[in-house]
Image 1: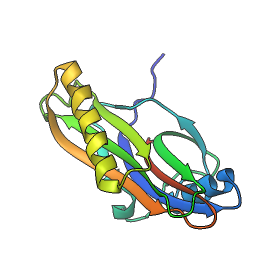
Image 2 (image 1 turned 135 degrees about the vertical axis):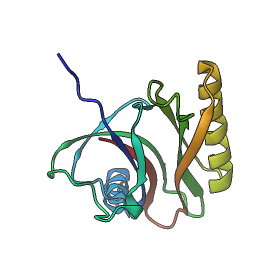
Image 3 (image 1 turned 120 degrees about the vertical axis):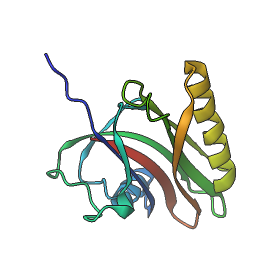
Image 4 (image 1 turned 60 degrees about the vertical axis):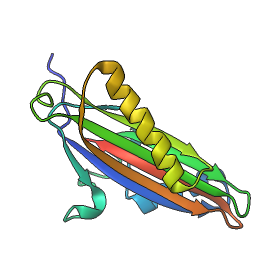
Length: 165
């Protein structure tokens, strides 16, 4: 049996507010452009040779799959309903040196907290570097996607996601 090997990783982010945590999450998914799919949360492996894109940079600005499709996603999300609290969600993605990327996978690490966005990004980058170090592989390129906001009156969610297709 031959399994499907994804060829793309699409990075996206969103911020949502709502009357409940679930509504805030749904609105963050809408903002990120991935709300109308059945998300399957997967571990953080980037297939060898996969191309990395930011959704905002794609011509279509959307995931070009039929609505309701199963969509493998790595994501970080953070929630709050405490007025004035800062929340951040970050993904760091690394790929190995070009000659190695044909046979060695990349990695994605996710981090969410009530830290400032730059502090959360720094923590997530350290996690990525350790993941590569533990595998004895050098990072060639790093990619980041992050969402951060201050909670207002409603439930609030920030989301950073990597869609693997």
